[in-house]
Figure 1 (cartoon, rainbow, N blue to C red):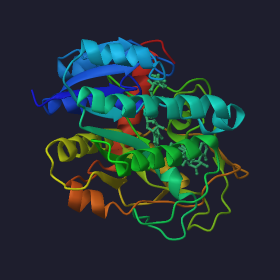
Figure 2: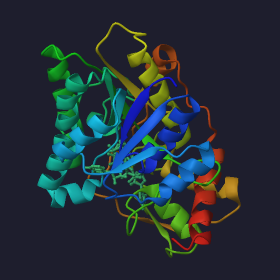
Figure 3: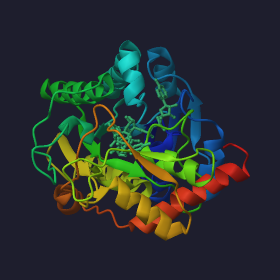
Figure 4: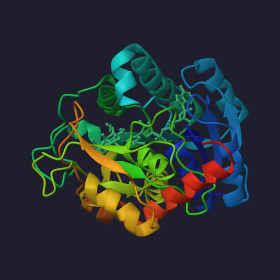
Length: 344
Ligand code: NAD
Ligand code: WQD
């Protein structure tokens, strides 16, 4: 075994895919999740893929006593990947304190416990949302951080600052901040994937639910942007590729491959794809039509943003490799599996 890793939010979308990659790389995984946005069956999916059922603790990371108990009962945790957070942008505007409490108290509890238990490093799930509407694309890690437009986005900015301040104060820990662009798709086995709650707000789950007939049609929010086809542009990154970057980041921190105590990496493909191009890629890859119509812009949307992933490619030694068509097929196969299982 290479070491013991605590994965907070490990039954969630990106967390579950990362657990599988950690296991494949030889790490022992302990998951903590309060199941507020996931369920226990995800553990079955993980076990089907890897053959190993991770240790699972159902608890809330804002509960410091529960976290302390977890560290006591699972001695020797070398590193943490902190996925646990509330992530719905719209909801965060309605319930800001819920977002600040959940996302920030979780992080503070983990940071406080790390030195006490000799845990060396923490990988933090940040987001391209910290760049807002970037002045230049592709966006590298030196691009300015723009004022957050939602409490959710603000929790990511504040979390990054909390980690930086803590390390500057001399705390005996290391950290890597990973700024994800738009994670999409599912594991190729279709054993794990994204489980949207209610009506999906994000593009891909809405698209696959439309393709399977749960939704009548997909609304494309705006075709009058300053982009070649008028729809917004994003950097859609395959979730398994994304998961693999976490393993690289952990290795870098825990094996002291860098002198730096705090590093930041953009995780994207480096290619911007428009919403209309993505719909087209889905239809080509699956042969399934997605009924859609153009509607007005969605308030607060960024016009175009895609990553410059050079730092992750060259320094972390990670690259997104999955073609978008494969990613679209994986999203579709996951949607079919959800239907088979009577979930959606
Ligand atoms: P997710 O909701 O699928 O996973 C988060 C998991 O954390 C869920 O299983 C949830 O039950 C759990 N959780 C939430 N609060 C908790 C708490 N207090 N204690 C214990 N468990 C808790 O979300 P995801 O898409 O997998 O995102 C993972 C991380 O990546 C989040 O921090 C998110 O902000 C960040 N991120 C996501 C995206 C994206 O588009 N999905 C993009 C950028 C960053
Ligand atoms: C993508 C594109 C929509 C739904 C959000 C968060 C961001 C980050 C990633 C966490 C946009 C368009 C969408 C639909 C559409 N998350 N769209 N019809 O907005 O890039 O980013 O998730 O950190 O913080 O804000 O992702 O999937 O919602 O939208 O036309 O029904 O698809 O307008 O251009 P977004 P998204």
